[in-house]
Image (cartoon, rainbow, N blue to C red):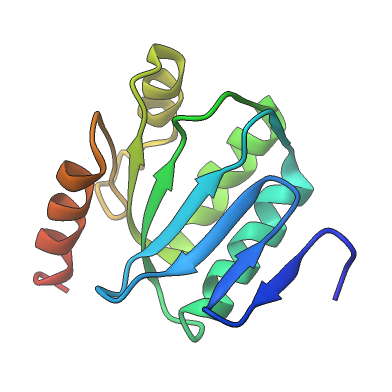
Length: 135
């Protein structure tokens, strides 16, 4: 276990930039920590920890990106390349225009791994669960 993460008994993992949990509905929830700097290493660790919580299976991911944080261009490109291997879909909760632009850039144009932004967590969860029924 690295110094940057710890596992909390309630099935929550905390990394240097995220709080990750597996919700009762099966969705992997990632909350970006205020003022976090998200780089390739953080994305890689977060993805691995999320898969661990989901027993290695493809995931429905809810990202609460409402807190201020920075995301490197390299992290965005890395995430774009790996998301189809580990995710069914990703819902991002944020009212920030730049987050919406990044989500649009990361969207898998083949439609295999959709990414969509939402203003509220309830809307995001409803959308993810509608995709879960299709899988």
